[in-house]
Image 1 (cartoon, rainbow, N blue to C red):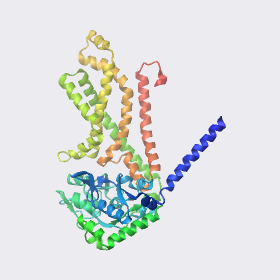
Image 2 (image 1 turned 60 degrees about the vertical axis):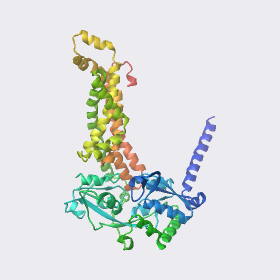
Image 3 (image 1 turned 30 degrees about the horizontal axis):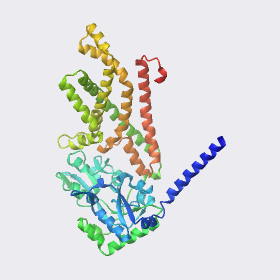
Image 4 (image 1 turned 90 degrees about the horizontal axis):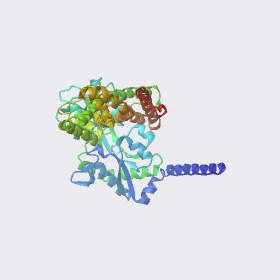
Length: 493
């Protein structure tokens, strides 16, 4: 029997390895697959917006942008149809490598580190790095901004240039950094000129330096295993350039300028971090991010606990007005995503009051979790026997004294296990604050994975730090439970 099970296990493992090998082999010969299915899939992130790709305001099923037109023209030259596949900007390269789509076409910049990882097509667009500052600022170079906060997107040439300078780098997820600049939270923004021209230079209070800080090119990203597809894409782009179709597409989107016909200076970028591997410097960055995570989590929970307790008491013992107000608060904050609440707090209220990133993070998570804590405490209060209140009255205790000395201590003992669970959940939900430019553990993981060209080691390091933070909290809560409970089953604790 044991031998038979061993053989079956061996066959299953061999089958899994064979499937994995076949899946890996599928990455090669993509050009043949594109021709066979008559479709070229291209990965991009619609969140990047115009002029790259964006939704048609008059047709929910249609997408617009110069790269949409470029993809359709490219596919037509190849004799197939084009189909876009949505992927987050930070995940475009790993998604391409795992075979989610055939090519990347989304403002992918030609850099040495990408040339090591992918096959890159001939350029189809020349961009300039535009420095945007507040009106009245005398800064015109990165040297003028030493020690000041400058925003950009991750995994861009602008990010590499800023990282090699003496500025304080702030990383954003999308183009909201120009609003941050206008509101005074940033000293400058460095990004490609198609983005700056549309989202920054037209905004009141922002001045864009006319001279490019650097120039680079957009290219199509192709897997290393697909030289035939690269040749086909290069031939199609060369033909589009030769007969003027590429120029017509760029002109239609008001992107054709002097840069497209001038020589492109060589980009001098810092050496990739992958050359050094995951070492002490990366561990230090993760440690700093862990401190931010625990700081935000603790402060948020210190806000959530008393506010949640107040809401619970209002719902159970307050009058009709207090009970209704508490219920509205709970339903609003439980019924809407915490990510949306962070956006509203940080970006939505910025024209009226500009919270700092840390303040907005603490407020957003604290106010959200207060709604959940309120329901935990309400359930604990309602679980207490009615005789406790009657006994307190018999002893001459007033309502406030009964609540403070009799009901709340017992409710706290009942609520402690779910409170611990909520704090661990809050610790993990703190990863959402990266959308307001706070670098916590998960955001540091994505940055390191980009620098090191891989998710495995940074992901394991991130998981280890989260465990190192959450396990002691769980143990502390278990000790408190043992101390407070009179349960005769300590093994369950």
